[in-house]
Length: 125
Image (tube, rainbow, N blue to C red; front, side):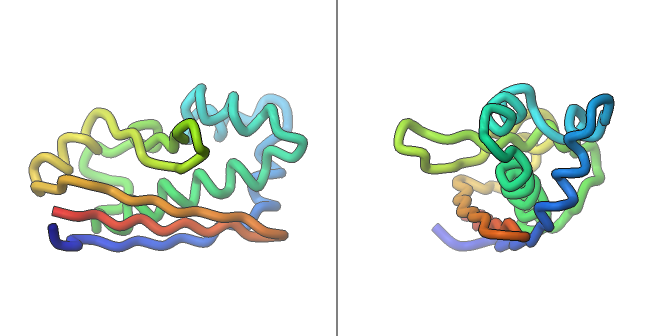
């Protein structure tokens, strides 16, 4: 396999703390119900949301497209396995683009500490 894309993103945690205000519709537009459920059960959801947003941005950068050509935030979902290892679950146009580009695997790593969250995505053919 060969690396066909690498993306990294850094997100400010405070930005996501502001989105937690009641009635704010941004979270539901960006995150899946599962992502919100996971983050909102945490003592401080903001770092978890920031890390997931950074992962979505890192994927779009690795793909080289940004958020266009029919891509939507909720087509890129961060999931975790039983051990807590994160990965991307893609649907819709995001999944189609991987097939069109013969991308066989995606790898995700993210972390949050203090004011920032960071994520890196590697795409392989």
